[in-house]
Image (cartoon, rainbow, N blue to C red; front, side, top):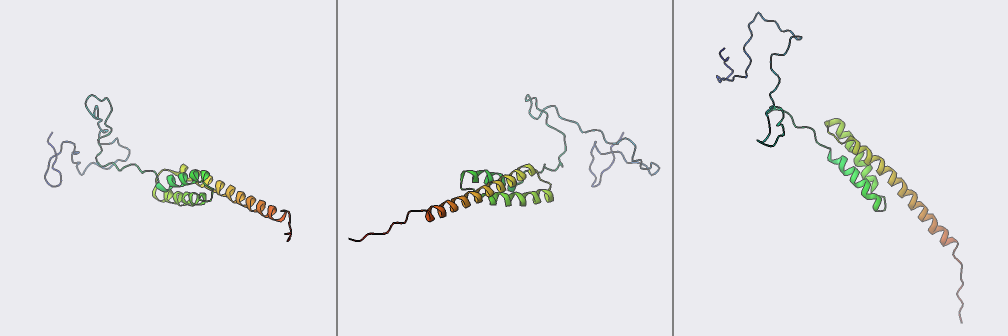
Length: 150
């Protein structure tokens, strides 16, 4: 069997043979291409398979950076006074929108950052409110002393 001529005049043994005009397209026919061949090992002697020989495979989508930042800021604000947790919650909302639009991973981290951020921020607001109420109560109930002049 001779190799067919590809566009540009170069020869490639893996290029499929040209079909005649009589052959109709059948979507249910078995594929004309064989499955991809997997090399034995990525490095000789390593024993690890190299994976499919697809040089054009798109890279896997990465984790959204804002999702990571959301979780880190929300968790770090537990150690601080808690007010910066609102930044983590807002970053989580933005990250979830970006993940939907871009198809990235990290939706769980973004959700966790949102939940932790809003809970910690709510607890911080309640804590600050209790602190202010305590200060007001102490000031109102402090003993009144009148100065005595000699």
